[in-house]
Amino acid sequence: MVKAKYEEEKQKVKLQLQNVSAVSVTSDMWTSINMDAYLALSCHYIDENTCLKSTVLGVVYFPEKHTAGNLASVKTSLMEEWGITSKVTYLVTDGAANMIACGKALRLRHAICVAHTLNLIVKKSLDLTPVLSAICTKARRLVGYFRSSTTAKVGSLTLFSYLLMYYVFVIAPFFTITIIFCVLKEKLALIQEQMGKPKLKLIQEVETRWNSTFQMLQRLVEQREPVGAALGGLVSDIPALKSEEYTNVTGCLSILSPFHEATVELSEEKRVSGSKVIPLLKMIEKVLQDETMRSSNPLARELGEHLIKLLREKLHTQQSPALLRRLTSECANGIRETSHHPQTPPVASTSTSNVVERPGNKLWSHLDATVMASRTMHNVTADAIVEVQRYLSEPNIGRTDDPLIYWERQKCIYPNLYKLAIVYLCTPAKSVPCERLFSKAGEVISKKSTQSKHSRTNIVPK
Image (cartoon, rainbow, N blue to C red; front, side):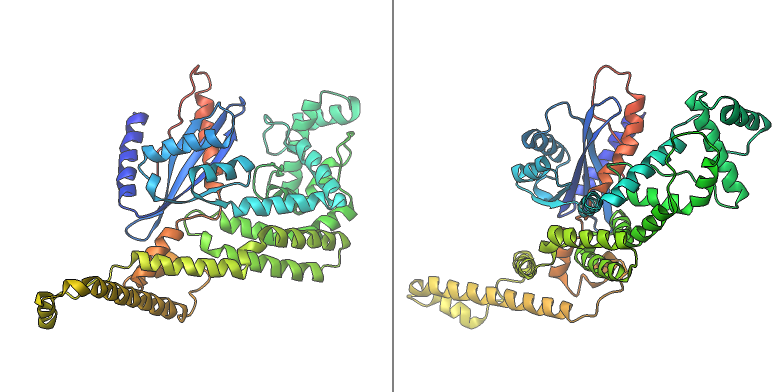
């Protein structure tokens, strides 16, 4: 039943892909809890209604070494299966060396996930700020204590729970640590309820998940009072954060917030994201400078300085004039290639017919053809320049407006630029779609874990 549904949806998507002029692909690797590696490949394109679409090409068991050649082989196979090999304009992955080499092996334009790059900048800056790094280590341990029990129910304490707490904390302080975990979680939930705060779980940092460090620290600051009260009277080595540490964390969160907001915005999958990268990076730098200068917290200022330095080192090429000149030249060439202006007048004039019939015309035929081709190319180039200039003279659309809606409305006014727009706007700024895909794939793979033979994990395209 599921397989039949998959094949039905697959054929529908393949038909859609036949009618598009360009696609981009994102790829990532994932390891299951059983230490089995999988490769995911997803596809992004703009359909005939100028709507952004995404589909899963495959999640493939990958027992081979993660070399560029092996990665390229599997990706090539998937692209051929879906009939998009000649339409792929960009491959988006993280910045791992084997992923970059894979892009070269495939001879595809390769873009490194911007969200991944921002995440690395934050991680590196935390490492360069040892005081904050130590606080994060302490926070991870603290959150780990509250999250380590998966069997405890969150709710009000029963009489039995109070008796159990009395036994654990007074009579037997060294009683089984699992029971402490259960009681601690219940105690936190009860205190949150008593203080009129929402019953929110603490967030543990995950190495591969965007913004998890920021979210962990932010949640701890939000739940500072309930967490402190829950830890009160508990005989344990649980590392509670001090008042000074909370002050430092609060200051650093203001510095980190531009990265958090940018990563969330770039991770949106329903709207184009590639076109907003350069202005977004400029805004991160500007806000980061302002927040760093405004901050009265020495640790926050130190973190801000590291972030600014690394941001400029990693992403300066995205804002360089040389890149702008190259892309402008690419657009001009693209317009010339995609233009379909008439090469000759639809009806030949009488004088032209007479010229064709005149004797000795063969002598000048090559020159005449060259002049005509030059004149046609000049017209195409002139039209392209006029179209680009007219487009650039228009006011910018609103920051929250959808660029695809704009291009759908203007495609008759800027027909050549429209063709370029749908080629480039289908490229996401991040490879996050594949990471989210693995969450769904993990559920499927876990259910199939008893099978002796690994195979492709088919997820219904959409």
